[in-house]
Length: 280
Length: 293
Image (cartoon, rainbow over the protein chains, first blue to last red):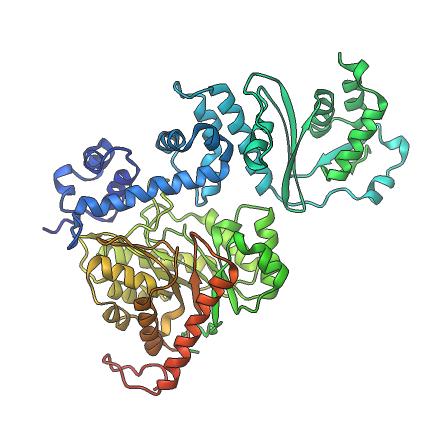
């Protein structure tokens, strides 16, 4: 029997069937699929082959859809997958793409809503940790894909008159992220991707900077004062204000001038900044 | 030049994949050309683009996309086209290809190459979109026959004739995926050689080869293995009809060392050379001389 409901209805129906998480029968009977083509009409949309029924042929596309989504998300969220395990991660993917199907020509941004989505789940083990881990992994994908920019050269730094530093601003490279977490998620990810020892998963403030240098993404843990200073600089504060702000915090006794020099030296060596903007 | 645009026969290339980046950059292997998956390089300023710039400085590169969604009833995504055009310009892409398929509607993207119903409506719709896309891109595009796993009862055209009509009326090129012809012929029970006979040779700018996974009841186009003998034979047949066309080996899962993939691509050269020794051959049954006549 020939059924031609038209191109648009066929496409809406087939996509509804592919994206539905139930069985093929359930997918055809779903509200979205029936909005395009009635369940009765749908039975003659796809021809059977000599070896497969219509539903079995449709099911090939349905099965590949979820595998593709899982593959994309596991590339961006290896830590979360490691923590949840393959089965729980797959179930999470199924639920995620139901709420946030891909709307882009690239799968690279499929996982952009994952940290926020995890917050909505009631049955996620150690949910707060998972959300923080996902937030870290999303940041790393953004650093990976950010525009490239050459870091400040030593000559450019030396060219700044000493008296100009107080009112100067340091502009971070685009492939830069700094974040505070409620769990030791960066250490956890180090256990996954570098086989470092895994930390105890317990609430603990941690601070991290991630950046890309020579097209490789790196990340370092920061002490809280270093995080405060680097955050202030990255947010556009002058070098003077950022240092004063850091040194007047309650941790002041622990921060020696030598620390400041060490941090700036490390950050310059890591290439975290692309320009010094001098006050006019 | 066998094709109407004068696109050259680039020889035998492979798809550039990230697992081979270091090998390619460090060893500059003697390979004729590379094809890249366009979308992997469109929204990144990171390592992939950096590697691509270096590769494009040494080798001819062709853009091959998976998200053009030329058959979709959604509006054309001009933001995507703008980025594709910029990428093509950046690396001096020899040509741009994608698939005869749709990937999503209602703003969604399933990231699959979904089959078209081969109807008059779909033909008219796709012709108009191809024309619009080519006008925007200011160059012809080539469309690949995708592997398909189902057929619509609404179809009134055989796929090969649909492609011939589409590419003639939209004035675009064809990327003939020989493995896909084989896969779809297995899945739908048609004669793969008859399919190739219907392809207008002056529109074919490139051929694809790949391995697949035979599940018994159907074949999946997995690009995960060596090319099977039947597909090599079909490639030989396609070469006899189409002449020297740029040929590309795809390997996307369980990817072995670069030399293995390259070696598989170079087998195509042997088939072509063996076949060329047999030419001149015969006039084919559509009355149009085969390559070499």
